[in-house]
Length: 393
Image 1 (cartoon, rainbow, N blue to C red):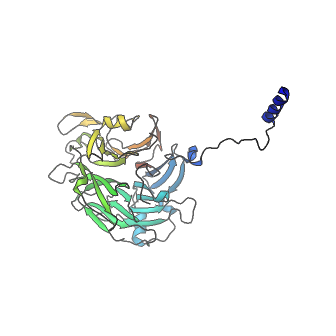
Image 2: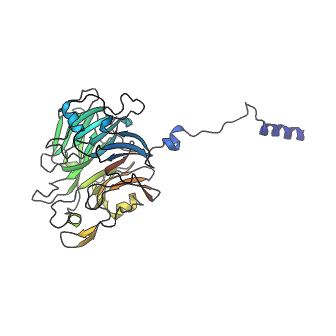
Image 3: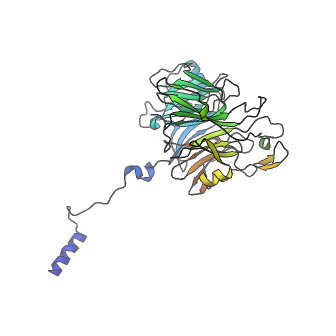
């Protein structure tokens, strides 16, 4: 009996029967390395023509857009601004569950299809407004709102600057001058906007006075929220959602004695799954707690908590400030940065006394490496919905 049982066991070991064979457990599709979130990055590359590209953490491109890709008929002004002698690729945003890209590209603020599995409709422009005017010429940022609305920051210095809102429904035909549904004035030099799905608020960061020094008062960096009224489809001003940085600084340290500009914000970044923002201004990052309404951390402390592994792009970031004091500013000029829930982060730091950077810094497990070397860029963002901060559906 004992030998018989042993031989039976051995036969199962070497010649498994169909009904006793258990296949190995396969990982869920979403957990496979190639399908995990935060592997892909969208980058805007300055050039003639400008380039939008989605790529992985190694820089391998999976999708790209140049104006030469556009084959649809366009209204005359839109076509002119698409083909303008402009190298801008100032903003790129994940929209519509990844089916669209919001961008500031050439002389347009636009929405373009990201449909790589549908070649007929891929790279089709579904909304565009020309920036070749005194209101939008310097627009730095866009953001999707509910009900197919689309916000464009004017990024100007006058009291009438702020945010313009358009209907960007793909069902509407493109026109040379799409109607402005709402004009929200008062926030100058807007460089970044973020939609807050939880509270139904559009957040923007800019300055409370002219950042170029043309006002007789200092300009402070501001994060301002505009609650969205679903019944009216309008954003509204609310003084309860205005958070001002505690200090105003000139930026003579970088740009030289007599330079009139004030330090202003460049990017507004949510902390994944937290009610907190990180804000980069010309001198370095700050952290804002939306539950307390307070800036609770700045500069090196922000790096230590949220961006371990950050390394300065160049070692020449020093100079003399307006009081004659020598300063080192290694955290200055973060034109864009993004945190991922897995702890990785990316950033673009412009060269000293330049407006843009020439590579993306990718930090994983505290170790930095450079990708997209030689690309002239302003923004690079994770391609996906940020945990706790989804875009409108």
